[in-house]
Amino acid sequence: TTMAWESALGSVIEVAIALAGFSGIVAAVGRRGAGHWSPVDQLLLRVLLTAAGAALAFAFLPFLLIDVIDPSLVWRSCSGLHATFVFGILLHRFREVSVLGVTQALGKRATAFMFVGSSTAFMVSVSNALWFASSSLYVVAIVWHVVSAFLSFVALLLNAWAQPPDATPPPDNR
Image (cartoon, rainbow, N blue to C red; front, side):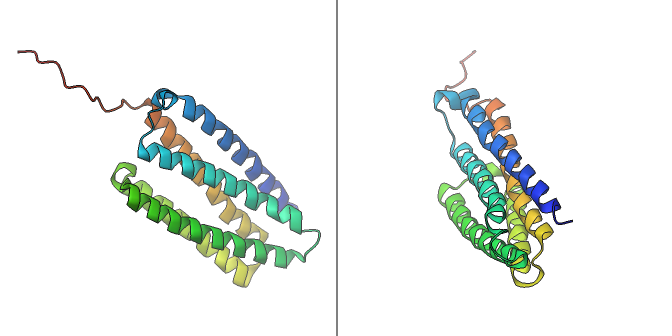
């Protein structure tokens, strides 16, 4: 139905706000509260905040445009903007990961999953902009940001509970 996208994007907005808010909790938990942020944790926090912010922005955008532009043009335009954003953030994250050298620490599976998810969101958005003009496809692409933010949140939380590498040598018990 026509109202389904409004409810779905409203839910995306609520979840994105919650995830962005929880990032503050994550920042205060464990060794991060004492200022000990690993490069991986810093990257995960940036991914979380960027994904939550993108979900918010792209979920709000159709509400701003739907009353002034033809609905099919709204979905095409929003999808085109979204595809451009995802492409840019993918390039940025690749550069960031290679400069930081954190691929091993993130894990090959996690890195591959994030790449496949982002690439899928990009392809869905491009297809929607060029051919489908569907509110449902737009929602699917935007939901990826919520998934990405949630996965980053979980990884940060799990990393906060992990034991930090011990810099002191073990005692000599001869």
